Amino acid sequence: MGDKKLKLGLPKGSLQESTLELFKRAGIRVYASDRSYFPTSDDDELDIMLVRSQEMARYVADGVFDAGLTGLDWIMESGVKVHEICELLYAKTGFRPVRWVLAVPNDSPIQSVKDLNGKRIATELVGFVKKYLDKHHVKAEVEFSWGATEAKAPHLVDAIVELTETGSSLRANKLRIVEELMISSTRFISNVKSWEDPWKREKMENMAMLLQGALAAEGMVGLKMNVPDKSLEAVMKLLPAMKKPTISNLSEKGWSALEVIIEEKTVKRMLPQLKRAGAQGIIEYPLNKVIP
Image 1 (cartoon, helix red, strand yellow):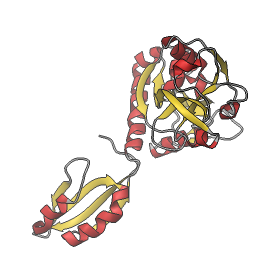
Image 2: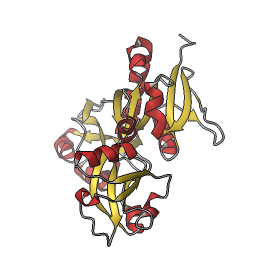
Image 3: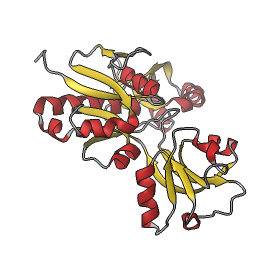
Image 4: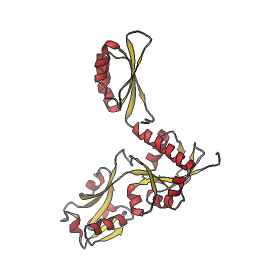
């Protein structure tokens, strides 16, 4: 068993830092150097390489990697067949999906995709955009953008299709969103044949569980407290737990111990309320993973 390896591709670039942090919270420490594409890990069953998200799906489909993390957008753009293990809802700057949008200068007459006939569009997502235009019976020139896409309209192109999380970069470049083409999020994918291998499949399923557990714990904390039985109902009403709180009897008669998981942002408001309702010995603790 010790010589078995899972070849794992992790995204290099904008998603790299947030991905390594997610793995750390999942209990898998990955150590990456700025000068190397081959990180080390405290899991000796992993053989890891960093590659660009744009290339990941193709390498997974070809069997270069058994599994990898990349965006739904790049899976669709590549057009290859991979097995999707799970969605991992995180991005470069937060825990939300990202959007590919059609944007034009604020003073452009373009109001919809139909107005792009005969126009020029810059984007990294060339294949998907061409299919989108075909679906709307629009004939336009789509060129690959090597970067700084927001700066190309209106001087070099009439419109752009660009990735955005908040829209702030588009607004800063005096661009407005015309249409949303796709919502994308990170996906954990595997090679189809690798998924059929029992050892590799179990390894990937275990990893998916840990990664999803780390994401589920984001922004959540645990609370423990002692509550007199007479105050239990009042305290329970204050707690919006994920499920019913865990309650156990204390050795001291007439008292119970109560434990819940709640959103961290509600704690500062809730703690004084719990104290006034009769809770004592309240302990707040961080969470690394929440496994449903």
